[in-house]
Image 1 (cartoon, helix red, strand yellow):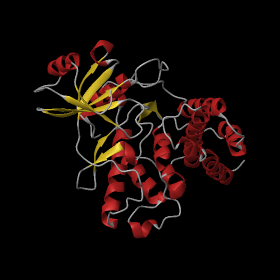
Image 2 (cartoon, one colour):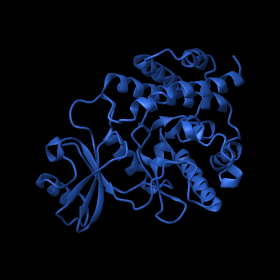
Image 3 (cartoon, one colour):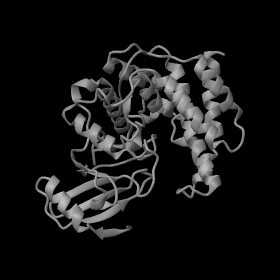
Image 4 (cartoon, helix red, strand yellow):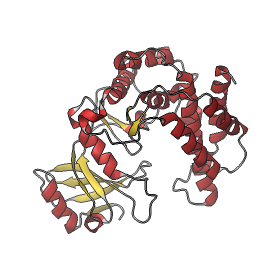
Length: 341
């Protein structure tokens, strides 16, 4: 289905049974923006909703886990983490072609450029402080207290991340990237385990939150597909890669005049998160986690390069994006080399 279409009767019936106060009929609009799970805006006389579904057709067993997204957001409803209200999960593919869940539509802004063009320094400062506070709220959640004690495997999070993204990179290699080979050797030898296990978002960044329509604050966190139980320090390091990446390479801040923009520097931003989560600043092994995060991003980008070469990429800019794997790997290796061999 493309464009704006009428909801099928089976979906109308499901919405009527699971969304309090629902009044149809609904019309569906497919949203774009790179979501791996098809996402629809549902407009009805009773108000707007969002439907997230598993892609149609065969998928990898652990991929596109909309049921996990629905579960974690429902569990967080009573916490300080701002999430849309989840109305229900439907596992019956006969209703809309595949498993899906429905949540509230949260009005607001989704922005991509961390330099936040068009904002005042005070607004930028407020947005970054709200992002920081939101990340800290996620990492303060006690999984067992909200029914998420079994949401992931306990322990060895960084070790599993190294193994996973090494496999992913090797499976998608197109041309040799010496920095990636060096990182694959370096990371296991510098493995750091904080001993912590908490809720991690897995992809917490500016364009995975909704900002208030007019105010500089986060009103909802989206895209929980990669969430699990893991190391909060590693999760926050992935969020903070932005400070190490130049703006022209991949939505970064490195080299920008942050004080004049009103954007906190790396050390200040990290210290705020540490204060909010009761950690020392910087946490032990911080640079290892930054290197791991950059390695992971380079591996993801290399996967895009492979799909572009194979002709299976959805994004027409995939080849250009994929070409950024090598410079990202060089940034990661430079950071690793400063730690030591």
